[in-house]
Length: 626
Image 1 (cartoon, rainbow, N blue to C red):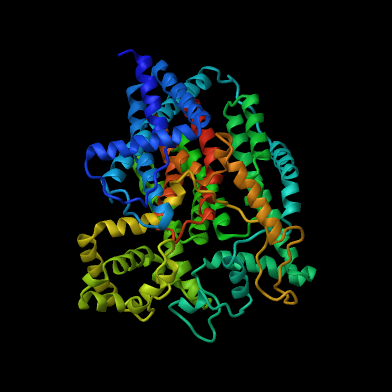
Image 2 (cartoon, rainbow, N blue to C red):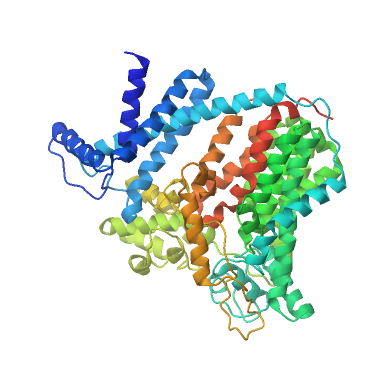
């Protein structure tokens, strides 16, 4: 058969799978295969007849992509990468379609018709993502080769003046956002409670679910104490020096904006110093200055943003390890800077410690020759954080540790879904094991499939290690009886990060303060209120729906783009994959998130662009070591 005819047939197949609506709550059983196929054909004809122009545009676009794929000499390795990318992509789109209507993962196999639809749509997603990702991997290679061939022979010398000039221009470009969102922004709940805890005010949650409670305990490490102290200290500065809390927030926002601008400028100027062309430098710098997410994130007083900054600084250090082939690890000052960055990353977010351990293992595998220097750079901050910071200093400061429920939240949610779905199968022994750690009687009333907090917060702080051990045995026994329930529970709280239909906003528009306006801790937002906030979010939602161009404003784009870049850099010379490990861990942690909140993607957004640029330039960077 002629290749063009094959492409036309494949384009039509994919167009049908991508555009024909399927009602996943339609569980009417198909009588046989002929009935199932016939029902789907009728659905196709009705849909195409109602909007021929739309379907023709999709068909033409898919056909163009398939023809382009066939015209390129894509390597077998890149085709394998395309398959590895497309399988999870297609699966997650089908799962998202099932969960979206009612938070249940049960309709895919509810009838022969829906099984047929799911397979058809899944294959459509697989083939289109395979074509696009394979072309993307080919383009990545092409850009690498082009840059390598056109590399400037002389490296530019970067001075302090260049850093200052670049950062100042960036800040001036971002200043309209600083003014619009003045004095800064925060999420609803966490930051303002951290500030109130700093000033020893009553907050209820999360202090009331901490393992240590008492009249002289005002702060918990549930929200990392480092960020609580940081935000509270700036608010206190505003009150003590300027007589108003909002001034402290404004100073913090400005300083954080300067740090973000300096970090992003550092990446680009560092690449220039290694031979990046003037044209590429200008394009990169102006993208940083004009892309709205950078300034709107940099004025957020939220622990996720603080964590993001130290993730970026850690990526900058890991990048230098790759550039030098590990030689820079011999320099004592670099070990100190890397160790400090890792320590601050651990102190600003709960998962930081696990990220550091994973990166340490990866670096040991990649740079075994420098194992002693790596041990110093990683183990020292790990020991300081675990033993000195958490074990000694927080106790001395009377800071209550975060509860065990944070680590066990995903498991509690899985147990709760099991109880809701299979209550009749829960034995008395299992009830007792569950009730020893969380309130069994409240599960039916409190269970929310989209978030873990309602169940997690019933955790009994008095539960002993033996109670938790018995619960884990119960959890494992239930897993073997109905593993699909656990799978559905985890995906229900995380699938949105992988679903391109999700309109999520990783930034905030004003400072959410729940204290009285006459309270000294009240933080006034000057230009944005709730009504204007909705309009801003509405504008960004419209931008996200713009074909192709709007993708860079969508949170799921950064999820899949990170997976793409990890695959693109894996198996190549230079160990570039190691710098993508931290973003990949940020994707994997989505499965352990208490709910799908777009702010959890802030580290991904900040890390993605500088690391992508580094990966594109890296083919010659590692050859030309100082």
